View 1: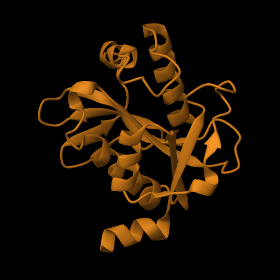
View 2: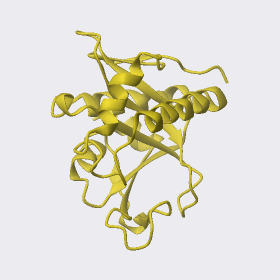
View 3: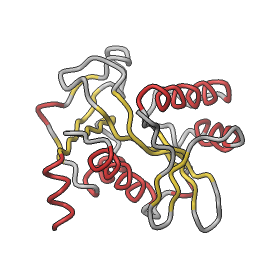
View 4: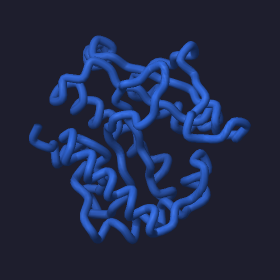
Length: 189
């Protein structure tokens, strides 16, 4: 499949990663507030490795986590996109939607706007039947984004994240889902 290299929303450009994105991305991933629902902040090297994995996902599957750029300023603000879930669970195989934005861009609707654009790509361009999202039980901000793009909580699918040790406070995760019919209903509604 030819990779989908770029998407646009009203205020954002979802684009391929550039080498110069690393500095801002590493700063974002080192911020303890941004990373509070992840096991730990990332070093610059870990952030670079994550960009490498994202690029590899694009090369293999034609989609992934796009770098986010504000159209008005050209500023890099984070990432949003779709990727194959990288662990085994009752709901896998599946494609998940995810996002991570620099703190100074929180509260402006960018996460929801970029996530909606990614969902549109998943259903209209990639022909996906369903997209999932999940986060730590305590991450209410991300759950609010999931709800704002029409995803529905699936309490029966809530799970313990297998990549975190038993007893870790972030291990309990909530699962959200949206299928093509639900997404189409949000377009009409």
